[in-house]
Length: 508
Image (spheres, rainbow, N blue to C red):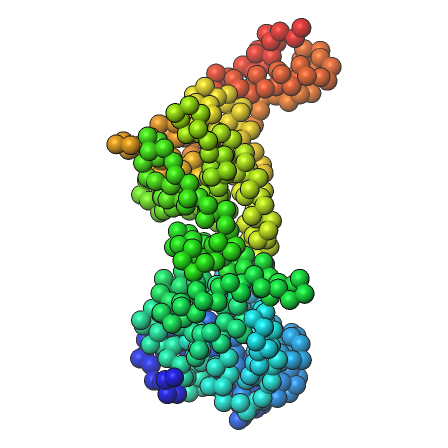
C-alpha cells in the first residue's frame, strides 16, 4: 500500500474546489459550524472529490466532519436547515439547506447533502449489499474512514479549511492514469459487497477508465457470487444489479456487454444475450456476422454521423435497451425452409423474451436510470414495421397509429430502424436504407420538422353524424378514418374540403 500522503495540488484544481464549494453554499455552512466547533475538521469526500478533479459534473455532496459528536452536530444543523439522522448506526445526517442558500447539484434540484462523522465498516463477509456493522468515532483518522471505501478514485478527501487533498491510497495517481483499482485487496473488498464488482465496470464505463489487472482478475474469480442467496434472499438484489448495469450500458453499450461477457456476468444474468453470439446468420443478408455482432454494430451506429444527420435527439436509454434485445429471439426462431435460413416471428417472440429479461432483472426499478419496459417491448415487437409493409404502400393513418400515438415514441422507433438497417450488411453491398429513407420522407410530409405535432382532424364523430344524419356505429369510424387518410395525405387541406368529402361519402 502507498504511504499516506497529504497532497498539495496545483492552483487550477484548488480553484475548482473553491468554486464548487462556494457555489453550493458549503463554505457558508462550514464557516458557521467552525464558529461553534472550533476544533472541528471539515472534508469533502466521495465521488464529488474525484469529479471536481477531473472536471466532471458532480452529482452529490458528501461531507465528513471530525472532532464533533453526531448529536451535537445534529442540534447545531437544525438551527440552519432541515436535518434527518439516517439510522443511529450510520451516523449520517441528511441536511437540507434552507433559502437563501443556493440549491445543490443535480441540475439545481437537489436540496440535501450528506454529512457524516468518521466511521469504520466491519463487513460480515457475506458479500451482501450493505451487510456490515458500523463503528463511528469523531476522532477516527480520515485515513481509516477512507480505507472502508471501494476504489482508490473514491477514497480521497479534500480538507476544506486547509485546501489540501488527503489521498492515502493513490487515488490521484489512478485518476491521472485512468485506472479503477480496489482499495487494498480487491478480493476482500468484493467479499464485503459483491455488487462492487459491477460498480468497477460502471465506473470504468462512465469515466472512460480501464480496470486494474489485479482488480479485474478478482472480478472474474468472484463474479459467480453475484447470484448467491441466503435463505432464498439474494445477496445482491436485482434492483442493485439493474442500477449498475443500466448506468454502465447507458455510458458505453457495446463495451459494457463485452466486459460482462468477459468476466462471466452476462452468462449469469442475461444468458439470452450470450446465445446471440452463437447464432450465425445467412451471409447473403448479414455479412457482418452473428446476431450479437450485428447488435453491436447497431448500438455503435447510434454515434455515427449518419445517425446524427437524421436525429438531433440522442437515443434514450430505453431505445438502447430495445436495440440490445431487438433480435434476442433469433436463436430460438432460427430454422431452415428449403435452402433458406429464416427467423419467422422473431420480432414478436423477441418482445416476449425481452419482457422476461426486464422483469427478471427488474430493469424498470432504478429510480434514476430505470427504463420504460413497456416501450422496450413495443419497440421490439414492431421493429420490422416497415419491412413487413413498404412505407409508400402503408396507410397514413396506420403510420399515425404507430408513430404518433401518445404512449410510445415514434422517434425511438425510427432510431431503432436506422440503427438496425445500417447494421445489416448484404454480402458485397452497403447497407440498404431505402425503406428507412422512404419512411422518413413520408413522416416529414405528414409532420414538417418545425410543427409540434400532427394537424388535428378537421371534423369529429359528432360533427359527421349531424352532417349526414348517422347514428353512432362502425360507419362513423369508417368515415373518420377515410377523412383522416385524405387529410394526412395532403389531398384535403381545410375544413371546407373536409365537409365536401363527408357529404359525398357513401353512407349506405
